[in-house]
Image (cartoon, rainbow, N blue to C red):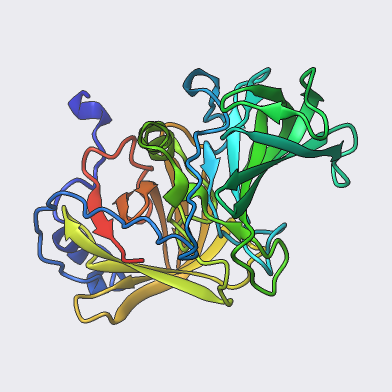
Length: 343
């Protein structure tokens, strides 16, 4: 990158902003540290101790995934369509025309028209491991493959249909993509909410499927991840909901806290920049444009300033580059600070 393209704000943020306005002088003078390896997030424990664990693959092939809109929308997040109960599965973005495949061998339980999307189908497969009953669910199927009908036996990886397309405005960008909702139900597990048997597929993935999933997850970006950033998020979450990220490397504010007032406001947050003590030194509202590839972007607006930023989040780690008030948005994350959060 040429010197002309480098952001003007590069340098120690606390020193740079001290020469700016009175408001900016109150940003935290955070100690610069070096980020070590990202601590891994433990996979959730299996939901029951009942013998018989289903091993599942991914319901799409590696060459059939997509990241035009989001990549993967994870388990448990709360959005407009799951504001009360949390997302009971994964939404997996696909290339247009991609096949949806059985995640494990089983028997077709049912095939029916999706009540929420006319012209699309839902396929449900039953899986029995010993005496332990599971079900996998595949929705937004545009066309069902031949031979996929009630009581038919399917093998792992068998094509069950074609993923349906979606045309939507994601952030401010009009996009068309294909996707399927993939859900795992464990009938030894139950709670008093919609989709009461749904569990996170994460703990059931084979090693090959997990490696494939991890690669796609690193490329995924979705509106809810500032507060619900994990592959498996709790389905029980009350709003307003907040998450604090603490700086572990690079130059920037010591911490930042994001708050969503309601589950339905996926693109609008409140923010607070934090000192080492955890005290808020600047606060305001934040808006996202999470399809701004290759990096998602955010605007942080306080009563006295507007800061433009780019960021990337993978589970418990965020890279965040924030410009000074009035400066142009950073063009990349080469000078981003590293922040981490805990489950």
